[in-house]
Length: 250
Image 1 (cartoon, rainbow, N blue to C red):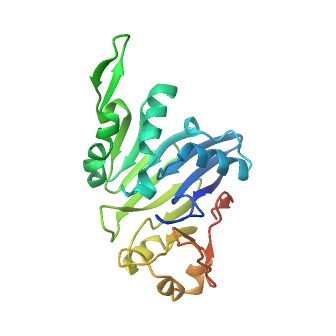
Image 2: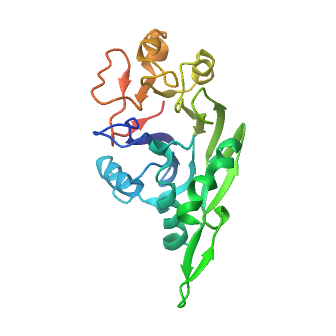
Image 3: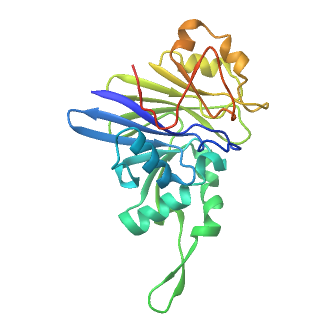
């Protein structure tokens, strides 16, 4: 059994070089793979195509995924949800499974309703109202949930809007993900025993300054990878993720 992931996007909200932060996580047992998506920026299908080709998984597509975990609703993490929902509805003809915190769930349809709330149906092109449940199977959780072989634990972070950090466990391995957050020693401690930690670093009071991560112990820095960093960022002490380059966990 193995746990690994492909960084489909590693940039911040203003990047001209990279897609927004997004991970495609694979649990593989024998010849069977289960995929989990973390966050969903636009253009998600293009990201899957490019990331899959780069990582040697050219067949990776929306239908490959058992579900999606959504950390928060900022556009660089969630702007692909409209396309994700429409593709499930029209092409796959099943709702998209989305696991997220109740506070994120609360605002989800308010974000999507203007573009997804009415469709023209039938030969008469009758305007027909649609709701969140017509596109998504949302599973709110405040502590732990499961999707296939993945056990997913969450913890809220310090950010402008409701946001969750994640511990994703499968195959005896654990991947930690800070999501967007101000530097929080308690969060670092919560993630510390994971086999690999993906942590954001960026500017501003709602993000984590690199200098504070650089002061962590060598043991923590060695199993940490950086994401959501600004263009031109060149860290010396912690390895940044590379878009499309598969990373093993443990």
